[in-house]
Length: 358
Image (tube, rainbow, N blue to C red; front, side, top):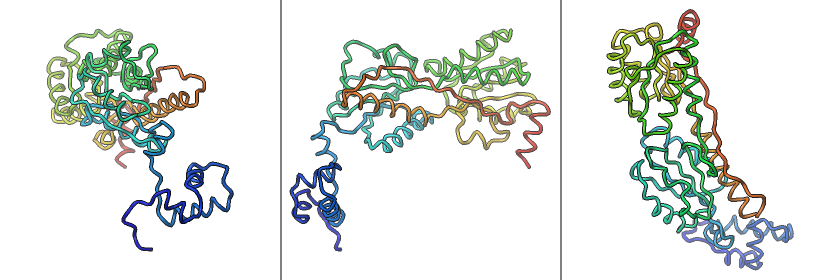
């Protein structure tokens, strides 16, 4: 069959099949009020002509766009980019399209134009995937914000009557610290993320609380603030080693910084984990392939994204079907500890390393 250079129409399908356009529409929408013979004939013509129903036309008829608005920022960072990838995959699986808006900076507070742009394109709901940094979420819950469509937030501090999906960063920090303490480390330093980030503050709070509960003094010289980047990890490590000279381990707030700490420690001639234990956070792909491989906290941004999409679609469907209302809630996903060579002391650690090499 010669390739068609124009879009087939529903009228053309109806003409070739010898039925009305209403019948073609019933077949497309899988309505039961069409005989099997007619359904088969119409479907054959649709396949022959390569007809594709207009998603826009169907949206106008149903007054639904099957489109989710997604607002993000900082896609150069691993976390936000992973989350966006997960949202895209989950939306595709649910047969929803995405309309993406990226804020020029994390601290953007002029959010009304963003919402107006998404609403003007008739999105069915919005996922706010911007990490909580400084006061950039101060507007959340304001009475003047009347969207009339569902809104789900990612990676922010839980609030009442707000739908939030996030990783339990505090629990992840406690897991990292419990592991180091169980390995016999006591003088544990910390390289935090930028402390205007809610996630960084949660991880640092876990570090402080775990040490205090273990009876270890926490001093200002025992920690340094980084900015998530590998460069800041090396710079922070240099400063921390200088001001905390008897430090025996470090809990680093993300893997990018932790991997540069491993390199810096090796350059100083320190043995890992005998002289210095190192634990990161994120479990990025590269963490497994450094030597020694990095112990870290696994947070699955893909699962966060999937849950956010499922939650917002659940709210959307409940609204359209006029079923029982879905109340806003906070979903905090637990992370997990991934143990590798960078923190294992003694016989257990030696056996782990020998198995990794063999």
